[in-house]
Image 1 (cartoon, rainbow, N blue to C red):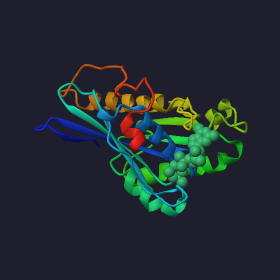
Image 2: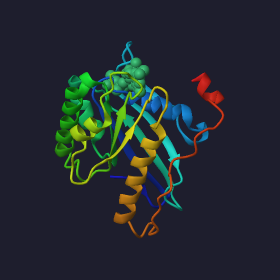
Image 3: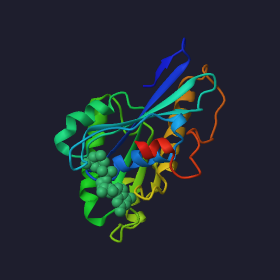
Image 4: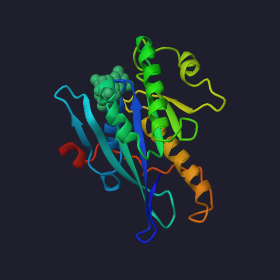
Amino acid sequence: MPSINHDERTISFKIVYCGTPLCGKTTNIQQIHAKLDPRGRSDLISLSTAQDRTLFFDFLSIEADAIPGYKTTFHLYTVPGQVTYNATLQLVLRQADGVVFVADSQMDRQRDNLQALQSLEANLRLNDSSIDRLPIVLQYNKRDLPNAAPVDYLEYLFNSRPVPFLSFEADARGGRNVLATLNAVSQTIIHQFRQAHAPVNPSPTSQAVMPREMTSGHAPALAAA
Ligand SMILES: Nc1nc2c(ncn2[C@@H]2O[C@H](COP(=O)(O)OP(=O)(O)OP(=O)(O)O)[C@@H](O)[C@H]2O)c(=O)[nH]1
Ligand SMILES: [Mg+2]
């Protein structure tokens, strides 16, 4: 559920990155943080172990030009992939407006991907939500690796549905399709929001809602971060 304040004319949406351990959730958020103009995003907050495993979550907030007349913010969270942190997954998923499910493309990770997708489904149900109602985008990550499974196979495993999810091939470490994935989920969220809240703004859009990507490398603020 988005958080709306009509007096202050602000709306914020929550996007959660889920997926099996080490599939690249944190790397997605790091790349988004690196690619976006610092004026349109917050600092990246990460709580991780010494081995860079996500302990609680990563958090990044992005301002976007999505709902005219309202300051719109997307709050991006990752959750730890390790099953020992399932309570965290459930907590962070609460009130999510959209989910990016990051699948690790490596052939030997498919059982874990499936388990993570089932866990996502179960946790959404516990939160009175559902994989069928929530905007969800699939990202097949680590496409750069030689042992990446064919995309057709991944589509068969994770996307054989009456209404398939939007899906993207990505190399989050190299930054490929990280923003495309984010844009897809945020557009779907905005589309669904507009359908449910026509009085706020009745006109539909198919334009990208994220702030523009920086074109000339990393921002100085990032180098210092
Ligand atoms: N080759 C390759 N490596 C990647 C890619 N994306 C992430 N990695 C690497 O995979 C490892 C795990 O990435 P993380 O982003 O920490 O994974 P995570 O899903 O956040 O892991 P947990 O928080 O522990 O669940 C890191 O060494 C990344 O550099 C990719 O697209 N290609
Ligand atoms: Mg992580």
